[in-house]
Length: 269
Image (spheres, rainbow, N blue to C red):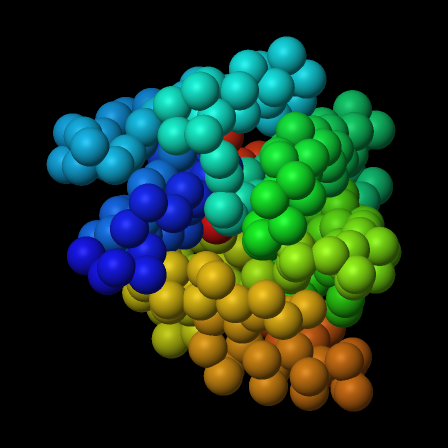
C-alpha cells in the first residue's frame, strides 16, 4: 500500500462488473478505500470480501435522487470524505434509431446523463469544502463521432462532454477538477453486441488497471492509453474514418439492449 493512497476514498459507480469492477479491484490493490455503487452486488460483494477493511458496497440506482443521496451520505458517515468520484455507470440500446423508442432514449439519458449529474450534485459540495477533489466522468469517442445503432448512448455521452467542459470552467478557480475519462473499446459483456473482433478491443482487467493508475490525474481529458488518445484525435480530424471503421462490424450485429454497471437490466463498460 502506498503512503500516498492510504486513506483516500474513491467512489466508483457501475462497479459490479466490467470496467467498473476491475477499476475498483485495482484501486483496492493500490491501497485506496473504495465505495462500490451499483444496483447489483455479486461482483461488488467479492470486492468487499477480499478487502473488508477498505471496500464497501452500496446499493445505488443512479436514477433515484434518494438512493444517490443516501449512498453518498453513507460513505461520508463511514469515511468522512470522498477524494475521487468515478462516474462509470451507463446503459445502451443497440438498434437503428428508427427501431428505438423515446422511452429507451429517455432511459439512456436518465442513467447515463442525469445519473452522473445526481452523483456530482451529491459529492461536489464536500469536495468544494475541502478544495481538493476529482470528478471523473467516463466518456466515449462515440460522443464526438457518433456510432451507427447507438443514437441514445452517443447522444448521452455527447451531452456529458458538454457538461464536463462547462463544469470544469466553473471550477477553474478551485482546487477541484473534473475530467473526461476515456477507456478504449473493451471486451465487456455488453460490447459483444457491437460485433467488434477481439483484435480491436481490450480486456476489462487491463483497462481497469490502466485507469486506476490515472485516477488522480486532473487534466481535462484522461486516456487509458496512447491508442485511445491518438485514435480519438485522428477521428476528430477525419470523422469518416470512425463511420467506415465501425460500420463493417455492426451492420450484421444482433440488436439488443445492454448496460454498464446496471446489471439488473444487463451491462457497457
